[in-house]
Length: 409
Image (cartoon, rainbow, N blue to C red; front, side):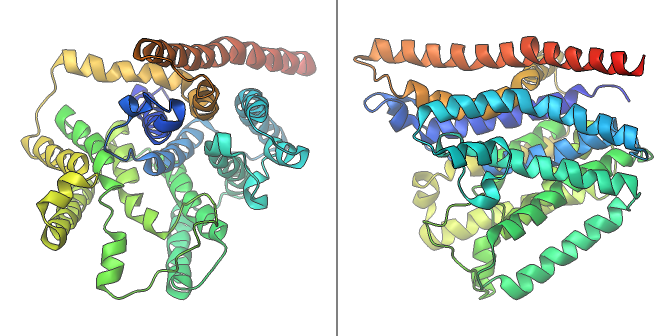
């Protein structure tokens, strides 16, 4: 199977969204005086971007992994996954540990990917929680592949389980990680399932419609109608205390599930007649949510409460989908240039937050020094990510390949 550059665009795009989200959220900490210049009146959809990472990860594993039917194949699969994840991950842990006052149990629990269930992750690098999920899904996939468990039936089973959990525990406390792991795995295993569907007809989707799908990213999270619909139906949702800090993959994230499916289908040009209906579903529900907000609070609320950008993104998405036209080669080339971020997206993802925290230690004395600081931050983050991903990682990968050759010979 050839390398799909469209998926690189998605991976780079998702990494950029997470980066922008945390720069925006921590702009005041990044610089107490001038940090507001980096702040925008919009909540970047980082949570949705992580779920996109999950379905994309499942797809990439599914498309690149032969059936794990022997011990040798399983060992090779595990080695490849660990070689890909661990070196840069350990560097991120060491870097983060240097920034905060962490106990050795906290550091070791992060090193061994058990910080999430133990509840002692590093606040200076909170995005690492998703690596715990990824590693679990990698190992669970071994059983699915070895025993040839039907992925389509697994997806149906997961949807039923999530439905039952919601029915019985929507207004009662249940450990949030039970829900988080289950919902997250639904996204991940769906990606693996889509990778296996090689017989799907080709989807000759236009450039404007692909961009329309991407534009929905900027409206879905902020305009998610889950909460209002639950209130309308008078279904009480249990509110966890603010002090109860945990990775929030929750019931309301199910709303993003079909979107995650359609964006993978669009980028891999796999056609299903339900694709367009999925888009219509989101157009209708998102516009209904915006109109509901305007009716209850007035249009000024849309403008003053972080909703201008999401609503505008949805409107542009609808126009691009309806007009259905080809994109000029120049614009296509510009969009494809974001695929370059894919090659450093992993390092960028797990290093950006501690890098923001590190540079927050140096407060700018004037506006000129502030912009020098911003440039230094970007150069450091992207430069280190480049060195780790494109220089160090190949050396490590080649080292283990040579060891494999030596053993087999």
